[in-house]
Length: 495
Image (tube, rainbow, N blue to C red; front, side, top):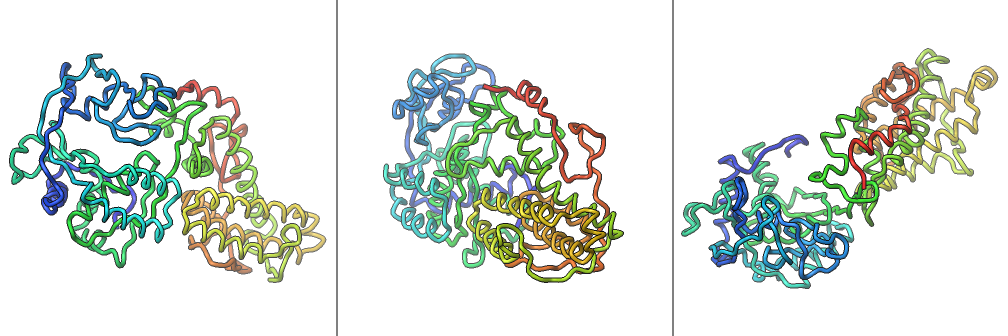
């Protein structure tokens, strides 16, 4: 399977072969048709096709007044942000080209249509099986069901553009046409695998042994639960099709909406400029993940969660235990006795066994917020355990065996935490494992004490950060000054 970080485009010839080949395999579900196209080509570089006009036009859909109420004349795109309904430029109120302010001119043009209406029974049958077996998220099921209830209609899959994957030359009267991006792009999942390995069919034509998991915002659901599956079903070939769908609502920004074109919000290139470690971003975006309803990105909350949860909770717990072993035991794990201890409210170490199983359950269901919060419950219990047992010099001197037992258990709890956070915060997981001088591990079904007495750990790491009061911090994370809220708001826009 292609590792994370394999990037490509759909233009190269070997990728076009996959895409064009897919098109040629199901002509029974295709037909020619004529459409009225929007010609916005009145300025240099303007796109002279319907989608180009839609993408450049502030719109007011006739079919959804919600957009008019919420966004007035400032809506954009080729589908309604409120209901997800696909639009064409002549279903819009007073469409205007963003480049020159003129209305698009109607012209007749010939295109290829996919007969989704003929494929609907097969798509519906597949959706029922896949959504249940793969435990799709509720909003993904709802969006897909709504589209199917409205009834699928023939969908234009070609465009008059100067860029894109050309329609195969054997298709008559389609010279100069290219495949529509949402037909082309989903097949791109297959072609990018072909870019990575000539054995791509072992992944994409092997449903008995391969499961496809996809993650996306709700606006992309129909393309992945209807258009792409219909594209594969129409070939009458065996394909690895969507198994699990994890769909989110919208993440908003400081009281408004993210908008790269308007310079509102923080994006990938902006993230690098903040010098904030990737683990901090990963954590905040996970706990803010809009799994059930829309959530809001807030710089004040971002800093608060870093300082109170990452630094004061997890970072403090790991740092306190590692430094204690460094200073009091010469970096060697002391000889501890394995027996049940009370962690909080009378619950013993069985609580961690159950919690580890819960974590695996959430992992399987892709409930990322539950998973990450459960990890931080581990570290909270660890901090409470240290406090309850009064881990300090007096305990080390006055009751050395009890002190050793506390340390032995907590070192192993930190090892468990490092495994549980690995899918979310891999660099933090590696840092913890490096400090413990252990290999990274998989998430266990139950908690076991795998770091034994006599094991030598490494020194607590030094973390340099631009935003901490002191020059050095012996923590996995560093404090961010609250004054940065206004700076980042000004830098990245706010409503």
